[in-house]
Length: 130
Image (cartoon, rainbow, N blue to C red; front, side):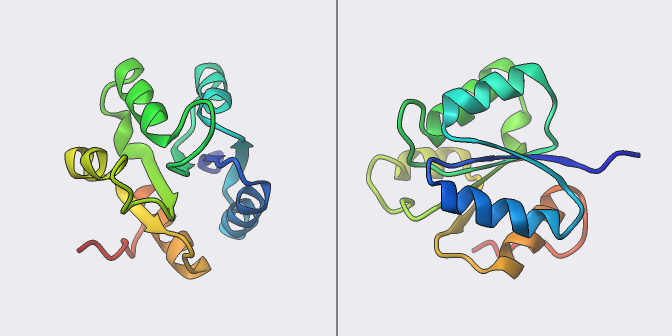
């Protein structure tokens, strides 16, 4: 059986690298995209078990990515984990209330990230949800 595939979507190369290295520690197959448009191209070409995405990005942000994923593959939004420092911005509050996605606030700990990803992929130890 092949390892789960994870797509990391963030416009900051350092964040993509940090998240990729952390997830590779759990033997996950990891690829990355620099924004939502790049992510959609990758999602159209192949299946990913999980998408880890920033909210705030140029061209197509996390909200647009989530909505497009849900439009094309209904129910797939539950496979999106947001990592963001922008959750309290007025632009994102309505979306977050409406969809109630799993979100890790930046800066997040490596253990929290790995535990949350394992949980979203069907493993033990879920995230702390208020």
